[in-house]
Length: 187
Image (cartoon, rainbow, N blue to C red):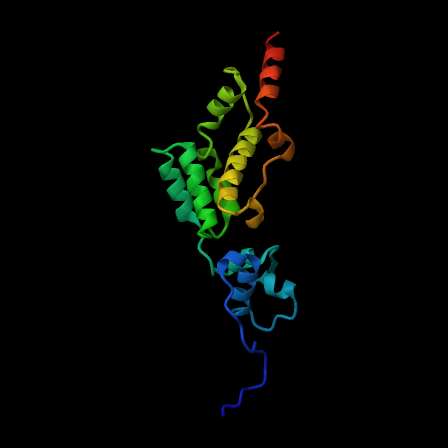
């Protein structure tokens, strides 16, 4: 029989798969942070309190910086379409490959939408249609949501990923409304 030294120790820590998100990162931190007495203590790294356990893991250097995924998407944008890139981004999300999806999104969103303006012009029967960056981002996010939905996932599974604007997205499938709006503008 082995006697343990008195002190701070966790008796047993069970494996938590990465797909469980913040619980996984909490368990990962528990193996490295010593003497924490609260969740805030666990998320405090070098005096900085982090909002999410995942951010604290990243700050400690326990996770990759996702630069390779940004580089892959940027490189693929030279030879592939926005449709392919959105599927690639969604696949990386579904398989929990990316540590910080919001970071990769912010660095690559401009590459994920090369076809959206043309698609919206066709969908609305308006060749003169112009959309701003926020509308393009929302449309790209909407398409990513649909890809994730077909895989049983949601953007809500990857906080703090942005979500598409509900008001804009509720009208995206209403082609008749878009045609009428275009005809009214032409008069």
